[in-house]
Image (cartoon, rainbow, N blue to C red; front, side):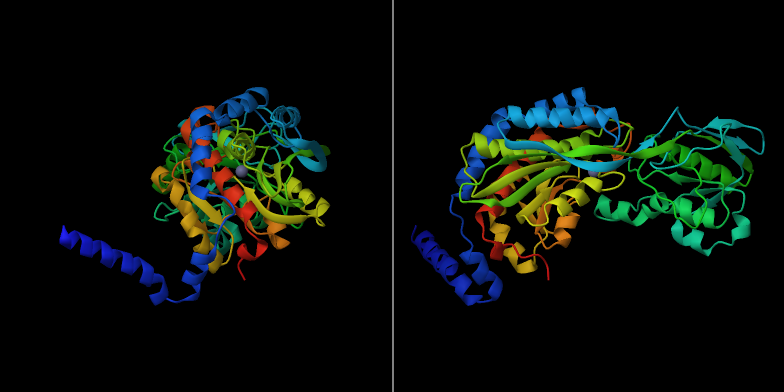
Length: 477
Ligand SMILES: [Zn+2]
């Protein structure tokens, strides 16, 4: 008993003295950040309301039912805009509107075909999809020999005479030894975005790539690619992982053969579509804006349930929850559902340009999938992030208490470049690239609890950044 009391005295002394003993800048700052509300109380209310009777999954189901396909320029995207406007109004948002933006219009056309015929005469159909933005093949398709290339670095080194007249097979996979799948994607995705340019420069007639995928299946994953003015455009395809494995094995075995490719994609003229915007007006500084956002468009394979319907729902549901629990934001919370993230970023660019003179206090975008959140990522300087770390505690028991430096999103990058602090949810990324830009990205791949927890966490952090002064939210130097 006595020893126990002494221990408590010692402990109290330690906790009292420890911050003074370690008298550096960070700990002083950590002590002094305070909110005008009780963060644990808000977290409890958001969990009760959100996890108890949240609407994230029903909103997601509704969007995917009304507008399952939302490629830029399509009728499906317009359906999504109608859904966004109607839903924001129905949920009680104010100043609900569409903001016009010109977007590109690419169409896939009828199903693509990729058939490998080995030197021994065996024919095998490969799982293939044209990359977004690709031109089609000639009307009857094309047939050519294939050269195996392990990625863009190897392509840069190769002599043109090994490539001329052939299909280049860019076979770099996502590096599984990296801790973050987004990093693995970033390192390999150059073969998708720039492969057709560099292969064409050396005389290739088409390019096929190993899909940017972590799945064990054979679904091809599409995604944006581009051409350059100074080289002829050539058709570009993604192969499913199993198809890529088989083609690689054939080529390594040296039996030779040809690949037949067929696609009838085309690009039409740009068309006017819209970002969708709705607001919860601020109670103290209504002219200052905190953005919650996602992108409403998606690739045409699958339904973009994770990419990025889930992110749009995170934004909508987070704002709805703040209202539902009676939290009154100081600043205006503006939900923005962006057009055309996938193949142009026209929505993000137009928003940043059109609202250049608006005071943006902070911008969140959720575009990393609706998987279990691990915490929040804030693109602030190190000392700001350290000072905010303690606010992660209420969500530690959910495995979502992390406060990371970094974060942001494609659509809010133009705002970041104007000096606006940005952030995003950090989710468990292990399975994101199983579904990304493929037919796998449907509602079946979204878990209701994981989706809802993301919205709850985003609401919580939205309330925190709204409450803090700009001096607490300094972007990295
Ligand atoms: Zn996305």
